[in-house]
Length: 301
Image 1 (cartoon, rainbow, N blue to C red):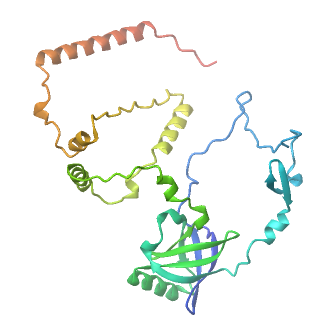
Image 2: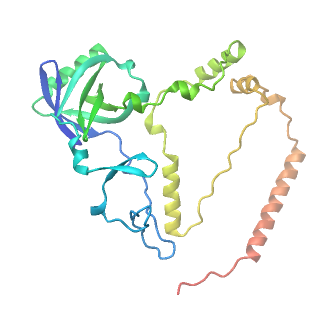
Image 3: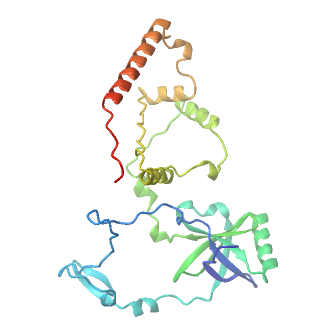
């Protein structure tokens, strides 16, 4: 991939076929706005310093090591050399262990996605694997050492290449049974279920990632821009929370089966004029107040 450095280079092996491949990061947070920690008294950036929890004295990097807590406040010392020795040896090979239906792996096991591209010499073998999986509608499970850890990887056809997603181990994924154990057993049926299905059918669409903007990131950019230009800071819009009488009434309203527009009380012309008069009066009063309270601006010295 032009302009991007490969995160890992090695081989992929399926059966007796091997070809060179490279992994590239498919998703990155490097473009997000980041902040530094600043000393409010001096305006200087704050550096992180490690402090001894008992003596409260700074500990230099060369005096730091690893430790595993066996009891409260008691540790066994693990030397960094010992940690390095536990890292499994890498043969730089993604060896396919099995081909499985794409739907067999629950998304909860997905960790990080990477684009998998072929080496120039192994393009034919790479294309054979890609097209064979696509025709058979399967994904590949492979294992290798990535970033100093043994990882399980799910490989799927993706456009002209493959996408390799590292998978969480079973012990890392929390049980869904524990998450839902307090939920009561409720079975929805009848009109309520029909209305829910109707609302869903009217909201069907296609997933377009470009249609979803990062509103938090945009708000941060607006805040930074306002601070740089010395403008008034953007104000958060008040969210009006709807309070339906009950679920069935809310479902009926969502499905367009609530009160029609003709059932709503009409606003008379007289009332409309009164409202407009009050608004004009309020704007006039605000304008006069702003004029009378306007303070002279301080000149730059």
